[in-house]
Length: 487
Image (cartoon, rainbow, N blue to C red):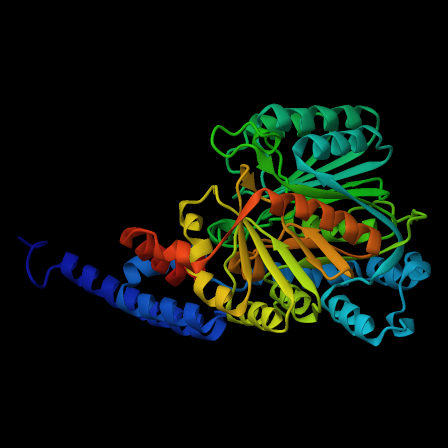
């Protein structure tokens, strides 16, 4: 009877708990208003936190935080501890290879490249050679051969590493490298690689490898911030050769997924001074995971190909929305064409406006996406934005020969990019991504040839195709559009 009365202890505890929950919900709603990067997201979170805090609060702390405070604080410490390295890269090691954009005769090109450069930590460098690696077989052969050639160190970073045939090949190559006296560092994302076995990691450590998750030792609360993921895929060998692009480590990338096959993807291999830009990105991420500054070589190896390359790392800790600005500037600077290939197309208002204006200027704007998708929501995404982009002249193509996962864009004949960033809000605002931007006619021609082959395997869709769909399909399309800010 004592515990069941209106004035019972249990009732008081429940009442206080409800009051504290709603009070904390209001506090977090204010936090969302102050910190969420988009107006739509701020309004949605604030309303949910005030009206249904019991549901919204745990979701907000897992998915709603727009700034990674731990990462920002660690980066400040990292910048202090690595200032000598960074200054050496800018004024010492890379000095002879940095491109002085002020000497560029073409004022238009100078302005475009200057904007990209200011978004990045490092500079454009010459003396590079970048080659396309198309699909899994070509990519993994080049990557494994690179590891086998390592003499000093190998830096390996992937969003997803699976303990399957490909993952075990990677592990065995790394263990063999360790046996040759090579220092091996493996960095994986805890969310993307959640299925990676402890035995896999233990065998690498026991062999003498250094292994870390992207979050490292962040404490219990930090481990619930699942919205921030390190989506980078980078391998650096001896500071001489580096790999990055869309492929993770798993048999599906070799076309062995039971549903998403064949798998279409693109990676690049880089040699030259810009390899150190990828190396620097890895060193920063390693410091965040382990609070350790890696003692590795920063020697420059140049190539006769002499391509202009910029390595641009982006993430939620940036003072500017680097990834979104990268895409927006690329679209706005196009005069003849801008072709974008991405498995996920969820543009925000700025990027959508840039696409429409480019098409209205007469630019050949094409978006290539897969018809087959690994996420049921993205089955409807191509149609969600179709009416407004088609009216402006933007062409939407759906790749028909399996699942297309590459992240590539090509602007005019001037520059092309291959990286890890998708064309969506997660890559723009939440993920840690990395992009290789190449200002070179030969590389652009190779990217053009590759994409023309992909467009030939695709179907252009129009608004009439959406009108012919069932009511339920059109309803799902509109619902997906409403969910765009959180996709």
